[in-house]
Amino acid sequence: MGDVRSANSVDVRLGQRVRARRLDLGMSQERLAELLGVTFQQVQKYEKGVNRIAASRLYDICIALETTVARVFEDIGRGAMTGAHGRAETSSAVDGVLATSEGSQLITLFASIKSPKVRRRVVELVKAMASGDR
Image (cartoon, rainbow, N blue to C red):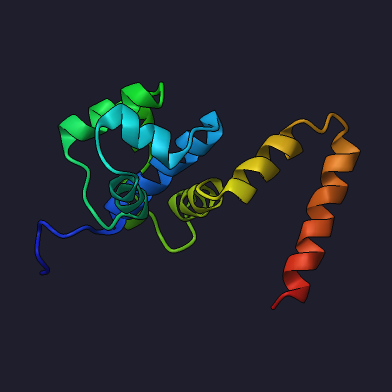
C-alpha cells in the first residue's frame, strides 16, 4: 500500500469536479486562488489531484464556487465499487470532459440545441469523428 498522504484517484476526480465547477462559473484559476488566499499554482495542483484538498479547504472552495461539498462528492467513490463498465466509469469520463474548457463549452452549447433531431445528428457526427480518430 502506498503513502496514505499521497494523492490518489479520488483526489484526481475531486480536482476534476472543482475545475469543472470553476469553468462552469467562468471563473479563472487566479480568481479562485484570490478568493482562497492561495497561489494559482496551488489551485492547479488541487485541480490536477497532485495535492490533496483538506476538508476545511474544500469547504472554502465550495463556498467560492457556490456549490456544496455533497455535490462535489456525489458518486465520486463509486469507481472502485462499480465494475469496469459501470456508471462510475462513465461519470469519470464526463468529469474529465467537463474539466476542460472545450468540454464545458461543448456541453453548454449542446444543451442549447432545441431540436432532438439536430442533437442526434450532432451525436452521430461526433461518433464518426471519434471512430476516424482511432
